[in-house]
Length: 528
Image 1 (cartoon, rainbow, N blue to C red):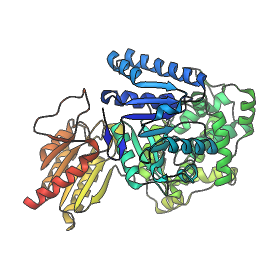
Image 2 (cartoon, rainbow, N blue to C red):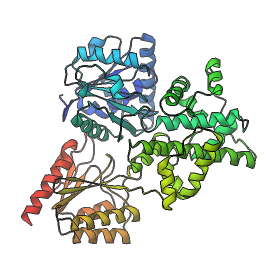
Image 3 (cartoon, helix red, strand yellow):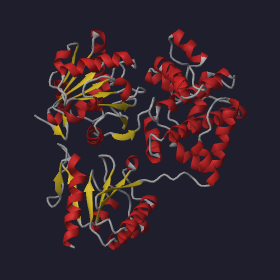
Image 4 (tube, rainbow, N blue to C red):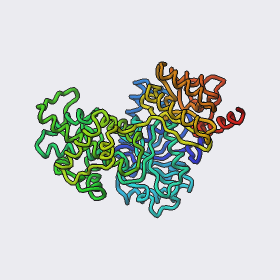
């Protein structure tokens, strides 16, 4: 079966590397694309790594079947369509290849040069790098416009977030196609500017460094600081536990050193990490369900230090201008499984958050105090974290609800934002129509009915211009009420096995949905 997704040919996909993350990337592709008979080939030079990768994929497939997340038939299809091999020739015909090898620049360059020699110029080359920029990796490569980064997070087959990083020479059309592709595949892709470490890893690594320094300063043992770090960051697991789960000690050692070279001298690989690397053992962390008691005074000191470091690191990325603030909050919340930091700072108070950062910086020079946090504290206002994004396409305003972890719930905040956007569209003579859609694949909009929804429905009625709903996913509860107020409803084609839509709803391929909705909205505006 030939599966074309805009500029991407998806009938055969490749993954380079059968180590820590490659098999999980392959599993995600295979689980999502088996109904389309898409082949996935994993290549590695090590037969041992290939064998371990096969075993890992098989083990996770069995868990999926046992948990009824995948049928027995689907699992059999995934096995049939996924191949592990040391023969690079078997990548022939692949339209997209994800490199998931070691975080080594020269190795990545050699891999991409070899792939470009084997694949056609139209093939998309993607790196799952966690740090390196596309400009570095694709330097001197023919057709660099077909290369970019898609950074997965642990575990890659389940964690919904990916950072999509285009380089200076990346075709903007390819970047847009990849963003849509990953959304269609069930991920939540976030566009991030090209900078070493992107928008997450300098924070993740800095959180670990701050925890390690607490141990080195005698504030607690590894086990104690790990336990307190969960409270400090609102995290599911502590900083040292995260290292054990991801097997990240060697990578974080290199990443912290590079961040120190590229950003500021506070970043460095601590002595505690160097010793652990020599031992080659996992960190001594709390066992599942174990209670670790830390006296209140030490606990409070550790909490203040870890929060000060975290807030400073987060705002340092915002100062770099590589990501939208609301997207950053979403990305960090889901990728690292922590309390969303900007919302957290708002709850604590931005001025108090600044005090924590200044306190940490004074004790740990040259830790930076970000300008964006200074400005926000001086303004005396919380950070604005909009959940509805407006982007105009000609005379059509596209409103996208971006709260996918809560299934784009139409609560008071989102309804209020939509009302303000609709009011602005009504007053804008350059806007002839509007389109409403959602971010993600799992929900267009949802939630219970209430007064806020009644006000939103009235705003749609008063718009005076056609509003077309573009269903990226199911509409439940309040989402269905909005559909009733729209001038037209279009939907993405259901995936195989998904419930059928009402016969009256026109469907279009996922990547074309919003574009077709804009065309329909303009058509309706000309009739009005």
